[in-house]
Image (cartoon, rainbow over all chains, first blue to last red; front, side, top):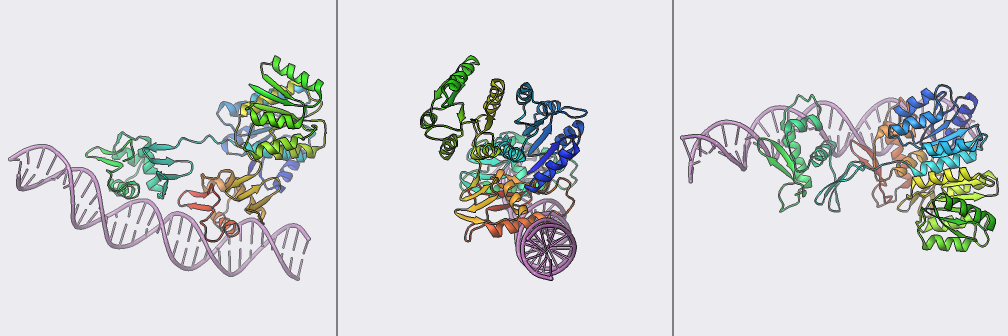
Length: 225
Length: 225
DNA sequence: CTCCCACCATGCGTCTGCTGATCGTCGAGG
DNA sequence: CCTCGACGATCAGCAGACGCATGGTGGGAG
C-alpha cells in the first residue's frame, strides 16, 4: 500500500515515514504544500496523510484541488489546532478522517486502515452484447458463464468493437485505435485478428459476432451473435 | 436520513436525539445493547451512533454481530474511555468512526455527515477471497483455518492483490504500490514473488489463486483459487 | 556466525504478433 | 447465368516477448 505524507515538520515526517514503512507501507514524503499536491496529482496513492498547516499551500487547499479534479484518494488530515470547527471544515471539504496532534501512532494506523478499507474504485461499466460480456477492469471476457481467454491484442480489438457495437468500424479506425496511430504495417493483420477473435468468441451454429461489412470494415452485432 | 442511537445514559440519549432531530434526522433510540442490536437487525438505518459501555451487550459486540451478518451500516462509536487501543479495536472491528466523550455536537455532526456521505459499502476489516483470508491489522493470512507465514514483501503483495481481487493488476501498478514508487529494478522481482506466494497459498489440485493475465499482469481469483 | 529475506541474473519453454502466400468468396458487368 | 477481379479469410512459420524456475549474492537481525 502506497502512502503520501505531506508534513512540513521534518522530524514528524521522518518519524511517520519510519513507522509506516515498518508497518509494511510504501511511503513518500512531501515537505510542503505545493510538492504534496504535485505528487498527489502525478501518482496514484492508496491514501494520503496530510498536515493542515503547511508552507505554500494549506492542507485544505490540497484536498480542494484534488477533489475538484475528481481525485477521490482517501485523505487523512492531521492538525495541531484544536478548534472543533477546523475538524468539521476538513470533513466537509472531503477529507476522510481527521486526527488532532498530538495523536498516538496506533490510532493513526487504525484510522489509516479504516480509510484504506473503504477504498476508492469506481468500477468502469462492464460492456455487454447479448450474452457476450467484457470487463475492462478485470480484463475478462465471457460468453454466458464461460470465460474466454484472449491475448492482449485480441482483447483490445474486441473492446474497441464492443465500445462501438452496432456501428460499422473502418479498418483505418481499428488500425489507429487498436494498433498504433502511426502503424505502418499491412492492414491484413486486422483480418488475421478478426479471424482469431471469431474462433474464440463465436458459438457454433450461430452467425459471426463480428460481421464483415464488405468495403467498409467490421461491425460487432449488438446481440453478440 | 434515519439514525439509531444506542446509549444507556438517558440524559445523553435525549440530548443527542433532540439535537439530531433539530438537524433534520429521523432518530430512534435504544437504551441498552440487546435492544440496539435488535433494532439494527430489524430496521435499515442510514447510520448508527453507538456507545461502547452498554448494559447487556457492549458496542463492540453489536458491531461484531452486525458485520458477521454482512450488515455494513455505518457505525459511529462513542466512548468514555480514552485508551487508544479501544479506538484501534473499534475501527478494526469495522466501526466507521470513533469519538471520545466528551465530544462537541458540531464534531459529531460533521463526522456523521462524513460517514453518511461514504454510504454503505461492504468493507470488511478482514479481506477474504473464498477461504483465503488476510487480516491487515494482525498481519495474518489463513487458508481456511491454517495460518500461512508470509514474509513482509509477500504479505504486502498479497494484500494489494486482495484489495483489488478480481481485477487485473498491471506489473507497473504492483511495482508502484508494493515496491517503491521510483523503484528502478527489474520487474522480474514481481514474477519471483508471485512464485513465492503461489508456493505458499495455493492448495494442491487447484488452480492458482494468483492468475497470470498474460500481457496485462496478475489477477487474484475472487474465490481465492 | 548463521539464518532469512530481498533481490538479481540466467536459461528455458511457451505464447504472441506479425508476415507473406494461398485459398475462398462476393458481386458487378457482360 | 457465367466470368473475373477485388476483397477477405486462412494458414504456416518465425522472431521476439513474456513468464517462470532456479541458483546465487548481499545485507541485516539474532
